Length: 120
Image (tube, rainbow, N blue to C red; front, side, top):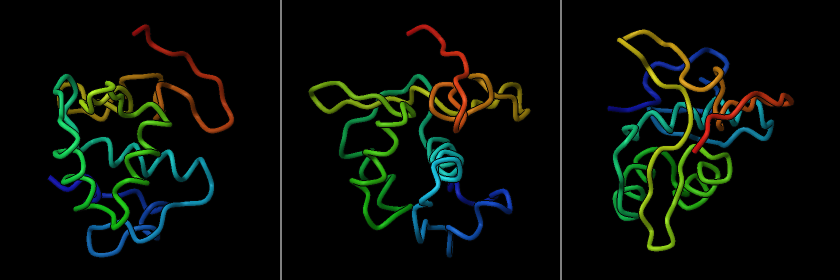
């Protein structure tokens, strides 16, 4: 599944041929794009770093930067031994596009806002 396949029009300028061509400079747009990228990771599943890198390499030429953005914005979490899991972002419930965490990427934090966070 390519999480960049069906993008909102506001994000299409950052994607070419199903891959990210440029990371948005504005945080609000970057969070929306990162939320789309997080959709490549199944909630509740743990991924070794090699698997995360493979997924991200298929989406952007600088997978390390993309991975760091995902961790920094709390869309992915990591253990010291390099195990990752999806820890934020939009979650589809019953086939609908319902938001799992106050409707924003990054644990419910909208750009410029201070939304609620779910307990860990």
